[in-house]
Image (tube, rainbow, N blue to C red; front, top):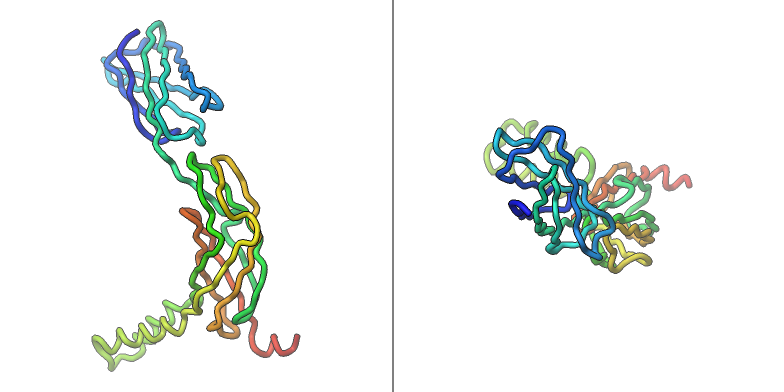
Length: 233
């Protein structure tokens, strides 16, 4: 055995430097003995200056956090290795954009999937909320303030604040009817939810909000029909 390797980081981003030059064309292998590993890591090595070698290890992304012991062999030299895998939370909502059409206070259903591509278990809460904001609302608020050329200081700030308040459509409430609860690494869950649109949505406007579940997010776009369109249905 030669110099030991000790490295800490996320499963696919582990790197260390050993004070030993690497012979050109030397083979590189890694073996770790653990029942928690679904496969052995991929290992890369290359010269680091004239007197050292840079070693990179890539473990499966769902490798549970913890300490793993093994060996890394570079050419004819075997190095003991201890790898401390850090938690890497990573949740995704699919699709990342959902487009809806509805009116103030309307109740509707929503179907989407959540993918756990990290290495820790998540808990998907049953109830979620997110705000809806009229598209173009910020630009309209700033434009209204600029047009009031005779106003200064706090008066212009008040105009912006009032216009932004008008553009805020309120809080949408989502309750997951199936699929809530824990989601394990490398698991995909189909979620079925009921969504209640807020009461302040205005006819003929488009609203956007961001649904967040842990560190994952999805943009929700709501098109509110014009009043005459709704009456004609």
